[in-house]
Amino acid sequence: MKTQINLENYEKVFEKPDTLKDVKTHYCPGCGHGVVHRLTMEVVKELDIQDKTIGIAPVGCSVFAYYYMNVDMQQAAHGRACAVATGIKRMLPDHYVFTYQGDGDLAAIGTAETIHACSRGENITIIFINNAIYGMTGGQMAPTTILGQKTSTSTGGRNAQRDGMPINMSEIVALLPGTVYVERVAVNKPGRVRKTKKAILKAFKAQQLKKGTSFIEVVSNCNTNWKMTPVEANKWIDDVLLNQYPLGVFKDETGIK
Amino acid sequence: MSEYLLMKGNYALAEAAIRAGCEGYFAYPITPQSEVGEYMSVHMPEKGRVFLQAESEVAAINMLYGAAGAGFKVMTSSSSPGISLMTEGISYIAGAELPCVIVNVNRGGPGLGTIQPSQGDYFQSTKGGGHGDYRLIVLAPSSVQEIADLTYLAFDLAWKYRNPSLILMDGALGQMMEKVKFNPYTEPERDISWATRGKTPDRDTNFITSLWIKPEEMEQVNLRLQAKYKEIEENEVRYDAYNIEDAELILVAFGLSARIASKSMQILREKGYKVGLIKPITLWPYPYKILQELASNDRVKGFFVTELNSGQMVEDVRLGVNGKKEVGFYGRLGGMIYSPEEIVENIIPFCEKNGIVPQEAI
Image 1 (cartoon, rainbow over the protein chains, first blue to last red):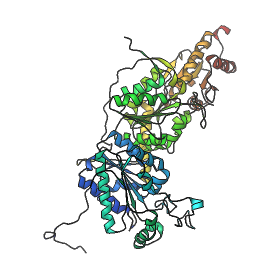
Image 2: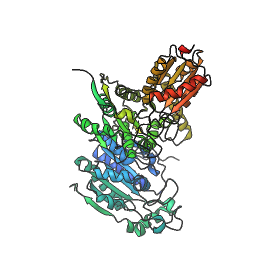
Image 3: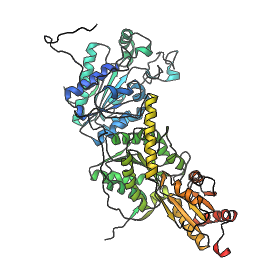
Image 4: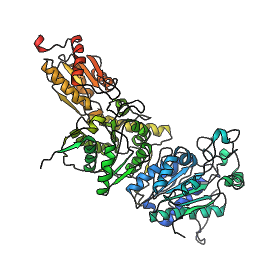
């Protein structure tokens, strides 16, 4: 049954930005990717830079980001997003170039590209989605999987002696002189979602300064592979995950309020 | 003033790329081609163009992917172990149909091998290298002049077909100094409507990808690629032929080996043997047709291939000859180079076995 609603007397207070394509995503219900896609594209809309923005999609769950984000994009080989972004930004220094990468892409196979892009101070924005697990391949251990966390390749829980320790990327890249802005945020609560948007907005604005790399780590969930409900997953972020990955600004030399 | 300059092969390559309008160069140093990057680091910024020394060959080829995907004329160069590191990215570039130029100044392998010249990367260059069904346009210069000329061509073919071009040379060509004349370069019209330069209101988004998750789509992409490769095979085969009009023995060699073999041909001619030489310039697409024609000619009694490897291009010669005539082979390995006389010594028993006799003996 179709319900006709007369919108004449309503004020529009919320809508999907046209910087997002009018398609359904393939993400699991409750996943943080949809939220961060939207925040990123809201920022592009608000800065009115759709015609100057080029995004890099990684290998991982967000590999199809170019079907969802209504900006020109390039799909990069696994881990190479920061190198691809470097190639674009060097040729188009006044464009806005961002990578959107998961933890396997950015912090395992692509660590060298990430570190060196940050070290050179490429004027790009790196959006790093850390959900402490490999989503697309079905829940294997990530470099950011925390000690004791059960995954399909650490079924007894991550063991430091066998599997090594989790890696804290924000803390690492903040040490590099090439980064200008590094913040870790989360999207498991409405207030944090708003804060994440502010961080992404500042990160994009930082590109105008040409003073270095802006790096936003978003602690997100993977309720499917964590084998939790979305509500449980968002609670687990607070109760457990943030102990390993504390939120906050690790570096801000942008001068942007 | 003479139009000719005396230049090292690696510098001539870099200068030719600049003259061909190369807008960005991304690479990692490796012997025996580091002079390319050194030259570019000085002369690209002078012209307001991009030079960047990457942290690895892996990063360099992906920077190339990004810059090519944004619609710029770009190049990278490396040598064998570095090219192996790049092959993942090359497969992505071929899959995403991005135009760019990749240079391999071949050194001896396998593994870290040696820094001395080799042609051991023929298979890697012409038969894939990376994963999936793809082809590179492979050009093989045999002199510093040809390095300059084929660099222009490598850019033009890459852009004509939206396909990566590979210049396959070797350490000797990269390091040798010869006279070279840079011909005027005419920039062809380039379509970049597909490139990622920022979505404008008049068009949908452009995206660069090699990912087509539905097999029905991926098959169509492959069929389109194969159709393009067929078109390249039909239009772009290039080779030089020397003394084939009366030849009973056809030498086949590319790059540095072709130069050495041409001297061997001269020695054999002086001894009375009727010898010709086919020098493939495009290693892919390969000049099978001329070999087929020569193999079908009753006068031609055999083919002899010389390569600085264990016998790689010889397989393509055998495909062209298709069993109609004998195909002999002589190679040196691991960075060693044969002399023209050494080739001759190895050809003469082949001639005796196949009834190729010097004219004086008749």
